[in-house]
Length: 466
Image (cartoon, helix red, strand yellow):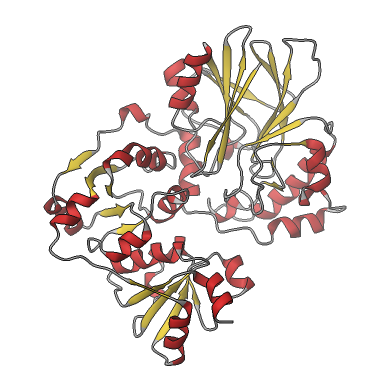
């Protein structure tokens, strides 16, 4: 048997290639949309990818199952649990097998048994894996998707907070309690392979270790130690992070399908500053992917800064308007990386890009903003010259914040600009300075210019001021 782990750091998403080397057949569990890494592995290991397994209708990334079906003719193994709202659509033309609790299927000598693990979503399933190529007649591990993570479990509130389905948080938490009881009945020796790691918004305390065991999670996962449903539900629903806006979009596209990458139009090259200015004048979105300090020192007015780092995909999903054309300012060598990241959350309407350094050289003047220290910010506050916008998560804000700071979480800022006061200079602040830098660019791009970014954020404020 072959088992390979793939991890998208920008999404904190894990997928798995599971192959039977005796028959040369393999399947992908919770595949990412960019299937090139799977194609390369299949060629290297002389495998034919015949299956795409999904633990549930994902909310945080575009599944690659339909891409695998198109490229390899792979069969989709998908849940048939949950009510009509949670059934996959537009799959009639694809090879697929609908699965309910207890159903089994084979990939070569590998046996996958379905376990309905509702709670995170109504249709959520897990896969118990047994390698029958040898003498094994018991499963060796379980692919849990977003059901059980290392040190955490899936959140049940996404359907209500992201998809707008009212009243589902509590019912999901109740269902999760029952699923956890089923999980506790599994053998301790089973390996545990989840779909996400630290940084994912699908839970609130995910560990950074890629895998675990059922026995270890029974002992040390916080969610396994409740004697009654009520206490469990209260603890599970408390302190969950804000779900990104794009989660609702992902639920839809993974349910009904999305255009294959091969059919997307080519991204046009903008060769001059004039081209970029025409795009901006038309009111289109332009993202500058440089580092925050470089952007702060000088940028084209009207552009938004989302640095190309591990948070790029998340903040793009929060801040990009999916309905509008998108243009990019970047180092052309990073274009493919940026497109993969954007397409992984369904941002397909990327129309053009420009070499950011070339267009900056053409500009006769650039916009900028200042970074100030917490001590400088404190002096300005004492003089009554500024007010503070805190763009951290609500849980961070509730744990401690600068007195009289206004809380507007970064991801929601674009839709809450009317709440921003403009009668004083604005100090934009987060935990360490990265998110507030993005927020400063959003404010400037929307005409709110009288601002500074507090470098080091609240962490440095606590250290230097308090």
